[in-house]
Image (tube, rainbow, N blue to C red; front, side, top):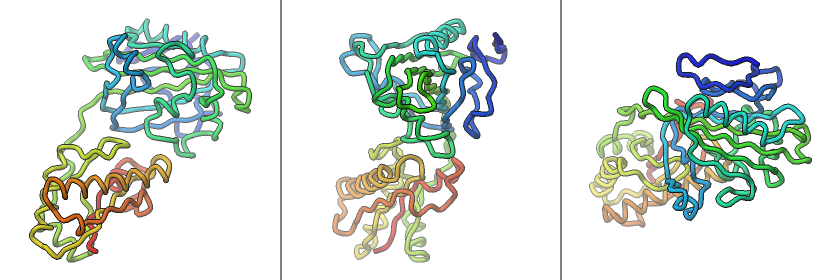
Length: 335
């Protein structure tokens, strides 16, 4: 056994193996927690800033009984890692190793459940209950079998959520193991483990400026459209956040000052997740903006038309977070 150092605040699993040749390209173990010995990393994803609800699989009844906040939301850096154990290992064995190592490192167990027990989803896996943002891009997973191992035929489901305090900051670590089903091809006879590590941090503000009515008007006059970044939504949702009001007010001012102006409100997303889901989300967000302008600012709905175009019109590369942030926007387009 090789035990990784506890210095520098790192959390250690007693069973450690270095990244092997079969690991998915670009993936690596998280500095807080290593892999089960001999496992290979078959998929990964990292988000520099996102919102996660680590207890969202709980029903209201179970949350109340266990005195837990099912709506707990944590904002920060998120990493998702999918591992497959060596042949002959099962979910119970792998899960117990993670749980023991975490508890020995001082982590607090918040909630745990087992396949088929009260309060634990019996099927579906992280892709349905936990996964942050839809399917992982092809470049960050070995093959589609990654989803099969967590699918409807997976058995022996084990779920645990831990809280680990380091330097006064609570990180949340989800460990979710299953036995791969017989039809999982290369993964049959192995255990599969999903790790989600959320390290809270305060978002860096001051990066978005609200365009005033004059600036929006100049953009429309010059290009017939203008991108707006002062309207924000929670990940995967179409509810306009309160900090969007200054930008909505400037849009309303422009339209009130130009009574003949008609516009398209166009929602854009990055390329993360399924296209159809992004199409629906971008349309719902555009419709939410139109609804807000009509309800809160008394604008004529006939002057506003909502359109969602998902990720078909990027203004930057989606290969970096900076580029994806530019692509997540609202456009005002003159009709």
